[in-house]
Image 1: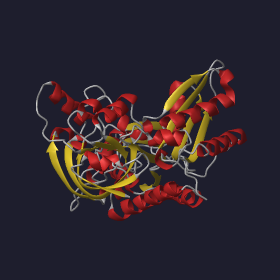
Image 2: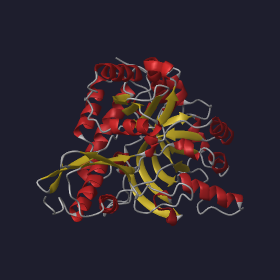
Image 3: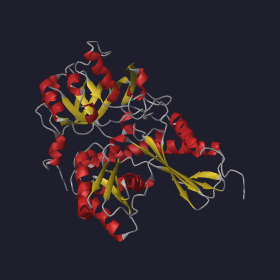
Image 4: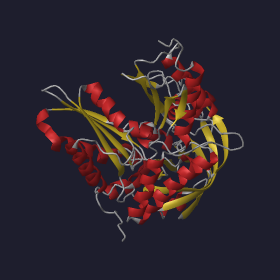
Amino acid sequence: MDMESAISKKEVIQCVAQLVEKAAKVLPDDVLNALIEAYKRERNYGAKKILEILIENARIAKEKNLPICQDTGIDCIFATVGQGLLLDFDLKEAICQGVRQGTREGYLRVSVADPLTRINTGDNTPPIVHFELIPERCLEITVLPKGCGSENMSALYMLPPSSGREGIVSRVIERVVEAGANPCPPGVIGIGIGGTMEKAALLAKKALLRPIGTHHEREDVRKMEEELLERINGLGLGPLGLGGDTTSIWVAMEVYPCHIASLPVAINYQCHAARRARAVLHNGQMEIVE
Amino acid sequence: MIRLHTPLEREALRGLKAGDWVSITGTLFTARDQTHRRMVELLEEGRQLPVDLKGAIIYYVGPTPAPPGLPCGAAGPTTSYRMDAYTPKILELGVLALMGKGRRSNEVRDSLKKFGAIYLATLGGAGAYLAQRVKKCELIAFKDLGPEALYRFEVVDFPAVVINDLNGNDYYEQILSGLNKGIVE
C-alpha cells in the first residue's frame, strides 16, 4: 500500500479557500441560466425588471470581484472521502482553515456567532461539515454558502404517514406562502422526505446541491418535483415576493426509507443566489470543477 | 420612480402609496440585529444614541468588508422581521423610513401609522448591484459588532419599493390577496 498522503494539508486549505471565495462571487451557470430562462418567460413587467437586475447583479459580482450577496453565509461543506484514501492530517481542521483563509482573502462577511452570547467568531468558522465515506479512493469537497434569510424559512414536519403525497405537497406550498419575500425568491426548494428528523433535514440540504434541471431518477419523485414547481410558480408571489410568475427556479427532492410510524418532511429554502462550488481530487491535486 | 432625498420630510411621504418604486439620494444609517439591541439598551438606560435619527432612513444591512479602492462591499437588505421587536422604540426617535425585505408584524405596522413613517423593501440578494449606488461608507458606532456596526452610507439613486405607506396599506398583502398581480401580456 502506498503510505504517502494522497494530498497535502496545505493543498486542501488552499482548495477550500478558493471554493469559498468562488462560491460567494460566481453564480453557477445552471443557476444563472435558470434566471435568464425565467426572465424570458416572465409576463409581469415589474417581475421581469427584477429578474433583469438579478442577472445584472451576477454579472457585476463576477466582473468586479464582489460577493453576489452581502450575506456570504455560513459555509456548509460536504466532503466525500474514499475509504481507500490516506490522509496524514486532520481533514476537518484543514477545511476550517480554508474557510478562514477564503473569507479573509475574498473580503467576505464574517457571519458566524455564538448562539447565546451572539458574539461573532470573527472569521466565519466553524463551518458546518458533513463527511460521507464511499468505497472508492477519492476526495470531493463541495462548498454551499448558506445565507440565512432563506435558511430561516426552512421547516421540519413530522407528519403522520396518512398525510401521504398530498399532505407533503400542501405543506411545501403553505411554507412557500408563509415565507413570502423573506427568503429572496425565486430560489431552489430542497425537500427531504423520510429517514429520521436529522436525516430528512440533511436530505433537504443535499437536494440543494443538485444542478438545476436535474430531476430525481425515480418517476414518482420526479412527478412531485414537477407538480410542486408548477404550483409554486402559479402562486403569483413572484421574484422577491413582489408579484409575478417566477417564485421558484427549481424544486429538488431526496427520499429515504423511514419508520412505519413516521413521515419526516424537511424543507430547506435556498435563495435566488443559489451558490455552490466543488472540487475533486485528480492526479494528486484538487481540481475545481464548478 | 419617485425621487426621495434625505433627511426625509413627512410631506414628501404623503403622496407615496404601497407598490410605488422610489429612488433615494442622500444618507442611510445601517443597523441590523445587534445594533438594534444596543440602541434600544442605550435608550432604556436613558442614554443618548451616537446619531440623530430625526427624518432618517434606517437600512437593515450588514455589508461585506470593503475591498481595496471601494467604499463598501456587497450591500443588499437583510430580512426585516428580526428587527420587529425593537422597531416601535426606534420609531419614537423620529425615523421616517425603514428599509429591508419581507413582511413586518402588526405591531410594527401600527407603529408606522402612529409615527407617520413608511417601510420600504429593496432588492434582496442584489448586493453587488446595490453596492454600485453606495458612494461613501463611514463607521459611526459599535465597531466591535463587525458587520453589524452602525454605518452611514451616502447613496445615489438607491432603488426601493414602498411596502407600508402612510395610509396603512401593505404591498405584500396586496400581492397575496391577488389585488396586485399586475399580469401584463
